[in-house]
Image (tube, rainbow, N blue to C red; front, side):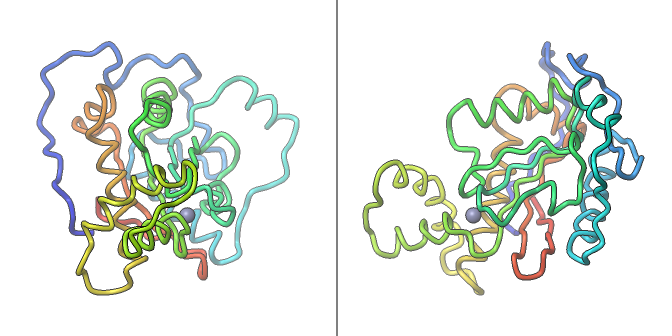
Length: 237
Ligand SMILES: [Zn+2]
């Protein structure tokens, strides 16, 4: 998507207790057991998600039944290489979509895959990065997203939605305005822009994540899952 005000990779001057490389409270060995390509490199982790999605979408998943050894390893701790902020939609389960075993993905799911403005989701991503050592954050939207569609309808109809849905959908409003007038399918445009918007927002928000992004330790990317093909497209963030 071409809506980037790209964050420059300037070196940061402040030292911070939770700077990149902080000692984790948990085991730091990668649990990338499915393919044994342990890595702290965001691009290598992204490449595994691409490969895993290719396996998923072509019907060649390789998640195997759990063994006692698997449970014993899980009980010792976690070091998920990637965070997925995805939609709560029942059709988009990240572990399946990326063909990843338990322990590899730190998953947050809310309708419309938004970080919002409170500390809960932001703090969860910060925890995954600073404490658990996650090095890739994917914000993933999907086709036929009800939350994005509601935001579009909400603005088009200038109506009021019931309960807290109004405030939830309101968080997508800036993105709907942002893509106004762009060619193509409006729902697709809004959904992709919303994923990129939230990935960029994460890379600029709070006192922890921007430093990891600026020194190249962590990468934030938007993604779009196509329900009708099972394919995830990664978006320029
Ligand atoms: Zn959705």
